[in-house]
Length: 358
Length: 158
Image (tube, rainbow over all chains, first blue to last red):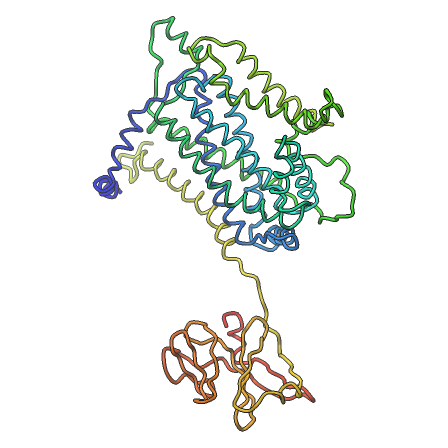
């Protein structure tokens, strides 16, 4: 064992990585817990890549075969139900943890100089993860997928100027059909994994380059008390915590998959009305609820378009926060952006709950 | 009571427990994964394939035609004397489809230059064994092609 490490070190200089990890200190303070999310998300990404590749062994992406092939995975392939359910639950947990990571970083203003690029790559990843989730639940091509396809691609049409082209690009034609399924399959298993992997690499390298961000409040307090913020070595201390966290997450994930396996809806019937209470997956419930509240017209603009433009505007303010929040950039307290962050979190949580209950 | 010497140090005991725990976890993950990945769909071969006499009569002597026996690609040879012989078309070397060469009256596999004679016996090149041969029988106006009982064991792998 030790000889292998030595031999590797001689050949590929493994040593510098370990010494880098040993020398890297992770600041320890009352907000340190938020530092754990990145490793958990990476772990879930690996699980998704493995279970996703496994599902590809049996999934047949065409309108006539997609639903049937998933039914076979669920009942005929040994442990197919488990593999699919783990993939399903890991995707949900990945979206939950991405949102937690996103809001925690926003609220401690980790986007401050010099981490603007890290923040931007993170924002891109949030979008990619959401698109991952959406494209994933269209793939069974059951009733729910069909309405998700219709509503989602129709919403793309609300984007000003290029909307119709965007919608037809996503659908692979004017209406939702087997072309749409093939396109979303290509996104889900080809485009998105490569894109996400590329952005993850940049994100992780940037995090290693800058070290962990320390919240303004902690910095101020340490400054006032004239003391250094204590740190723990990344290796082995934090990696050990990360490993334990991942193990616990894995246990929770498998438990969820066993107790609540993922479902498969009825077959698509083009001539059937949308079922009562059909709703998007939970991570789009807030968008759904906000759009439902929009009046038909806002200042002579169609309500849905106004809502979508408004949401995109709000998202842009958050994504470009590092360039707008001047106070935080000077490491000063920035109550306006703290309030905006909490407001965004509140809107997200409350609208999701109302959307779920309504 | 305290034992003076122990076979196992406390450290060794806990290390073993942790490694054992991880090994069990790995096995628990690997077992379903392996079962999932190695699942194969059963594709049973039919009992027999029936061909109309009139259809057989359209085949000239010293000619072979391809047909499907379930998922198996097969070849039916009508010899110069008019005798019917049926074989699996899969070369026994590496599963390429063989072809019949009327001028030399041999089955030839183009992948690695393998040869079989009119009876499907491997005679030259790399093929290690004869072509899987079928029983050709008659039933009223149809020709009945079926797997010989001895070959039924090969159904799964053929």
